[in-house]
Length: 285
Image (cartoon, rainbow, N blue to C red; front, side, top):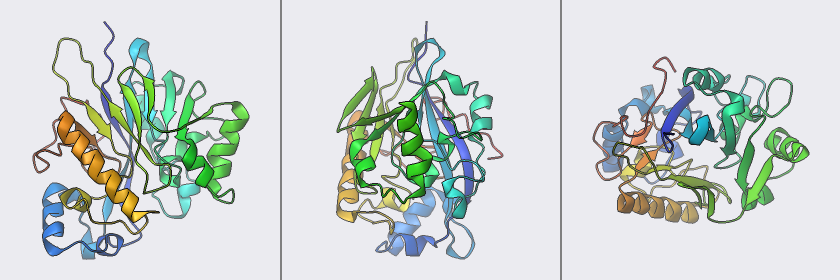
């Protein structure tokens, strides 16, 4: 029997952000930072530096197929090269998980920032996942400046191959896989609800957050803004709604940038439980 709905964390890169944490998250108080340090101690770097991971997630589908959520920081020559720790290692991480590029039937781009779209193309400028549909909210594409390097790295080439699929609002990608608009970080940001189906065992839903929250301080205090959010009020509303949804459903959060791949929002200070969503992260990053 096919096993589907399994969520595998794929670590593309780790590094130090170009901005100190206390500058990147204005308004956070001492108690917020203290709780954040307990929730994600790996994020604390020397002299207030913010250490973060750059992570994608693969969701298993029937018959050996996969859906990938986000495409990482990418190669050394990609758009993220100016600030992210490139090259990423997503191709190696996929191979270690037994996933070939041709096994990926869809790539969900939570948003069109450089560190989430890096492995869209291969070294020859062709789509890295040749058989995949790439799904993005139409509001995200509409808001992207054509001078942004991501336009020529993602939008233009995928439109040329017919692989870019723009969706509007809540979109059911497949049974158990739903795209949820969570705007604010960017105008068309989206998250992914995975309703797990694991024959013969217990399972929990997973919410792949994208950049709805990018640091544990926003888990400790969802009202705390991030300095690079396009619309702070909308981002806060999306964050609060997503966290409330995760608690109602008993879902785990799958995080892109915390140094913990999976977080239980109901008991966020407890250790990860990778036996529920298979967390296949290489230890060397």
